[in-house]
Every structure is written in structure tokens, then in C-alpha cells.
Length: 181
Image 1 (cartoon, one colour):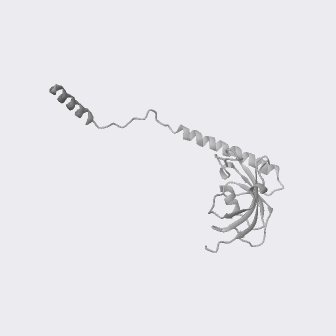
Image 2 (cartoon, one colour):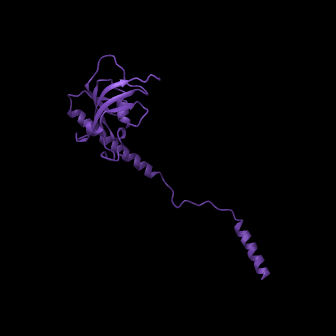
Image 3 (tube, one colour):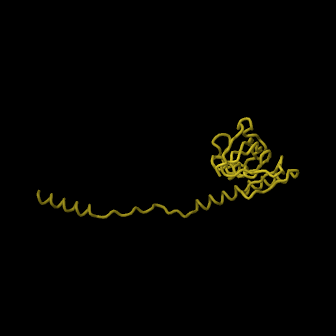
């Protein structure tokens, strides 16, 4: 019995001293998912740009401008006088509405209400934030935003769904300069 106990103890010691081996992956990723996702996004962007180009072509009375940030816009009211555009920390008071590319109203100015936005210090979707930087007090501009400049893949989790390009009509009421700059 003593012999059996000693032998069991020795076997257990030998087995427990074995170093653990790394677990091998069951499958290896080839990167195909990422490639497919990138290809889907390219096609989505291309399709949205085509829709926006059609809107621009069908509305020659509007002088559309392509921004460096990947959206288009035109002025309904343009202030020619020397005036400021908002900089970091300035408070922009503005109204806007949101439509889909077919012109269907998603959010009205009344629903959104007048906004006070501290430039680049608060949350605002990318296109609108960059669009406000182009505007002066008293101007009204209509923006055409592809989905990646709007609410993107997630939407706004309310009325704006996944990958929806938007039209926003924006009126800047006032710009209060940040005196701390």
C-alpha cells in the first residue's frame, strides 16, 4: 500500500510539472471579412455619391459647392459683408431641419428647436459640425451629407436608420465669439 501511494505521488508530480502549451487557433482569419467590409463601404459611398450627383444635376438653379470634407452645399442666403465664421469654443445659435435625399422630412426645425452649440466642444454629427464652420451669422445653407458625414452605420437610434444620407437646411442666427481664445 505504501509503495502504491509513493508511486501515485511520483506520477502526479511528474504530470503536474509539465508546462502548459499554448492553445492553437481552430481557424485562421484570412482578412476576407475586412476586405469584404471595405468593398461594401466603397460601393455604399459610390451609390450615395451618385444619388447626390443626381440631385445636384436635377437642381441647376442651386449653385452647389463641394466641400473638402466630403459633402455638398449651396447658399439660400449668403452674407457678403466681412463677418466671422465660428472658431473653436465660439457659441453658434442656429436652427436646422433634417430630410432624407427624397426630401421627406425626418426632423423639423420645430422638433429640433433652436440650438446653441459650443464649436468643437459638444457632440454634433460630423457633417453639420464642419458645415457650421463655413457659415456666417445670418446665412442659410442647404447641405447634402453622405451617411458617413451624417449618422453613419448606427443612425441616430430614433428616426434616422443605418447609412442614411441627409439633407439639412441650416440657418445661423448668431455667433458669439469665445473671449477665452
